[in-house]
Length: 150
Image (cartoon, rainbow, N blue to C red; front, side, top):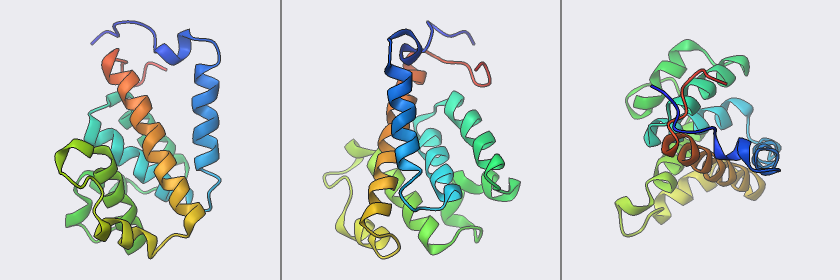
């Protein structure tokens, strides 16, 4: 596989720095770093962004994630590796990523479940992480960025 072009965020002045600032802000919302990394990884898996799946797994590993949990993120519903709070965050990540899959993209029960585990600042952090990850996934997938090339 070969990239179609450099990542657009690397070509336009200030773009990468702005995206990285959003990632940093999301990670300062009081949600455990490992949860944020799992959310990033799951969104990237849903979107088929190989560059972010690769980078996300490596970052999660550095944050202390185990291989067992990383291998199971794609099938998080069928494992016992994740806490209720992590499951709620992963469920929100999937719903907020697959917006067009249903009439009510993020139903109240999905939101209420995640809101039971995180305060408003934590919810903001998770939603921001989902949004920024989706942005990066779209840049990478559209331009066919190669996993491990950065």
